[in-house]
Amino acid sequence: MSIVLDRRHRVAAAAASDPVVSVLTAQWPTLGVAGGPPTRSAVLGIDRSDEAKVVSLLFDAAGALVAVAKVARSSSGERALVAEHDALRALGCTQSARLAGTTPRALALFRAAGRLTLVQTPAHGRPISVDYYSVGHVNDPSAVAVDLAAAGDWLALLHRGTWGGRTSVAEASRRWLLPVLEAYQREVWDDLAERELFAAVGVRLDAHAMATVPITAVHGDFWMGNVLREQPRRVSAVVDWERSRVSGVPLVDVFKFPTSYGLYLDRAEPWRRGRLPAHRGRDDVARQWAPHGDAANLVGFGYTYFGTGWFPALVRSFVTDQVRRLGVPPEVVGPFFVGFLAEQVLAANTDDFRAGCRAILRAFAAEHESSWLWQS
Image 1 (cartoon, rainbow, N blue to C red):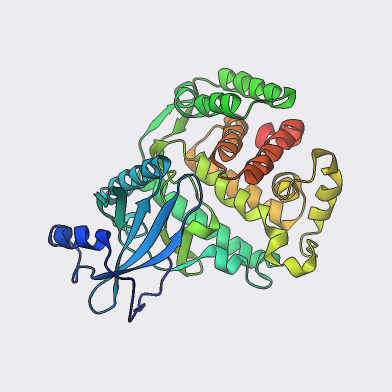
Image 2 (tube, rainbow, N blue to C red):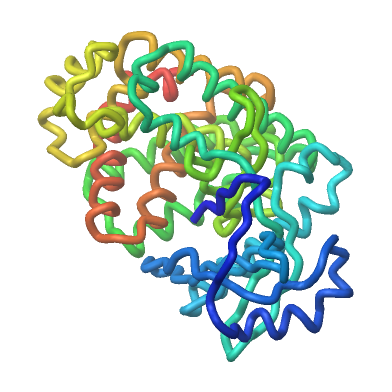
């Protein structure tokens, strides 16, 4: 859930007494935050996912926003808050002041009224998703190129600021990729197409086991709604670090941004009934991929990675530029992409969304040998 407010944001009134405010007020002098402690709160939203949370805005006596609180409502929500807290603390300790300036600062992690609560500084800027859903945006090649460039520049900043060296493909697979595929087989089950794809992943990884990949921090949910900016080309903040890892293979974020961008093009301008004149190659994919089913995001995925036209070309350039910068062997990009798709299935928080993510993975299983991701 993105916390997006203008720097001048003020409120005149908010919710009544809040146990989070009471605990935080006592700790405030030790937290190193300018200004007075919070005196009131306002509930921003209640998350209904498996990682359920209540998000509140905390204001000082003058009505200025001073912090954001996330309160867990389940055990999985608690795990997510701990992960976000640890990631934000680690990022705050990096040598890069610019990177630290684009991430919220974790202020405190405590229990209030028995609920685990994470308090952090508010982030400022407008999510890229707001522009994404504005009229004509996704049909403008230059506007889309700016979005991808802003995301790519920030990823480079993250990777430089959290660089952890390199490790072998064999070790990276053992620690991050194979556990995802094993969890997928346990929790989702697999049919013949998925089984054959996972076997092909194993063969490719074995063939390049001694090659190396970089280790950096991983955001884990790097999509347009979590990427904020105040200038078109420069990211001002990245929020929601609940699926993050302090160290991992950075390809997850490289794949996540363009994949999420491509899935919803037809919904950015719904009055066109899914037809996008600026994306003519998308219609071709819709016809060619009909045998793979009618899952809502399937055509968007196929267009992004198998289609023709300016948008798939921008995506390919984005991914290949990031892969080249990171020094990832092209031969292992496909296997790690399969792991990314499997992880999206496992992370889906509704049955419908999980079914859609699985349809995408199964379609990739059928088509992967014609993909530039696999052919590299």
